[in-house]
Length: 257
Image (tube, rainbow, N blue to C red; front, side, top):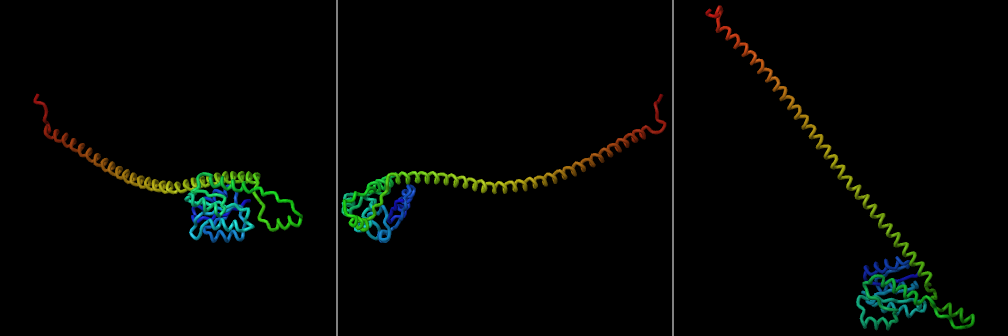
């Protein structure tokens, strides 16, 4: 797996570049200063170095000059990135023998395309001149790294990156589904609370209805008793009237004929 070193003072740029390249199957190391980049290069041999032209501590041109000065890094490509790409930047990049300058922020797949281009550019080393076995062995021992990425390997990386993007899509779907379930569970709790509140309201209404019904029944009973009393009084008055009429006629009172 090709190794890429990214040196940039901006965390955002580092994160974006790292994501763009790891999705293509590359092993990426990120640093924020020239000093850190030089420490990594002193111990490791990346296949490509991507360095910001101007960083807070020193310039990315120094990173490129360091790479070009090390026999063990002679096969390592260096791509400079800069927010400003003008004649002065291009001349400085050429003077330190950088492999190119890319403007940031990156547009589309510009960074990925440039990385693949540089890796393909150095994938085949020149054939060695005829020499004796001893000379060949010595040359091999003292030479820089000959390993380069083949087109078949690049295709494998692309396929792996495509699978990673597919899995990331599935992960996003699962996260959305989990969020929906969590929302449903959250919404269900207020619904239960509302149901309990409605049950309390219904119970209260039932109590009030029962009290009203009892009041109405009591009033109806009282009204019934009152009606009964009035009827008895009316009957008594009617009887008294009848008796009074009889008394008015007197005993023996009858027709004059």
